[in-house]
Image (cartoon, rainbow, N blue to C red; front, side):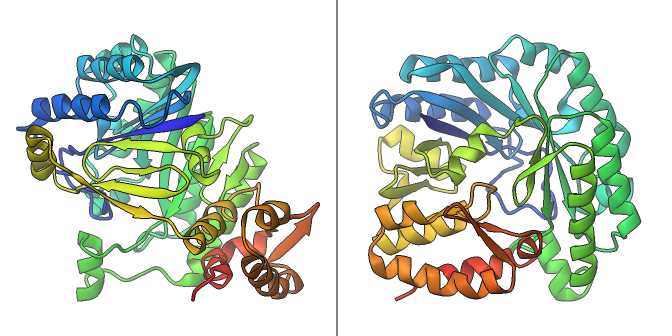
Length: 376
């Protein structure tokens, strides 16, 4: 089973925290959809008829597409690939795009999962992030999606925002829980170079939240979502009744996926490929039938490090048997040596041959992964 990712590079405005490739110029949107379908056509044999279990529209803002454009892309995919009958098709959406008319249109496409970019239910937070919607639209959009009959809804939240108190964050989490959604993704704010927030931080216009408060917000998140029946299956992702994001779960399980559109990535176990992060260059290359991607062949060390960073993030953890079967002894020995001190400190625990992060380990997961990496 494999996955497909579609990168829609258009946004009406640019959020202050986002470093994904996007443009606010919609002039080439029609040309983009045509080029996207051409790329799909060219690459239809890359998976050798392996069945597609998930399709994910990300961005950018996929909900700026017309319903007809979404349907056309999905129809083209179904003509070019073997798509599973129970395929999960996710559309990322901004709350202000989810009008009753748009939602009714979505219901008439094969899309069966919405990922709504809520980020916060506080107007001050939303304004600081340069989000287009307000708190009322955030709440109303989720209810409207449920009213439209969409039964698989995920929402995104961000914590660790400048000036965000623990009480503010608790209010966000409790409001999310009360909406009875199936999935919540909660990410700590990262100051990516090139973003507005990064520049604000460097010039002193904003201050990074103290680590202690960030940890308190994370602990509150874990506690409240567990009480509400959510299972943490990845550091930042929580699901009720095992309604995991099938697409993201496939990333962490290192399954094959194809990425279409500017800046989209692909993975086939042995190599990674990424498309040019420029709509203009992408369209030009498609028109001229020229290369619009780069490829990296993964060494054994790359594959080992990939396994560390993807598997340790999840509740399924790192399998000693998998390591011993798929990697040279030097990688296995390095892993066991580095993992031992975290077993002793109880940041990791070992059960039935599987290494997993403890609750304490979650707080320092980046440090643990860094030390588990093999570097020559």
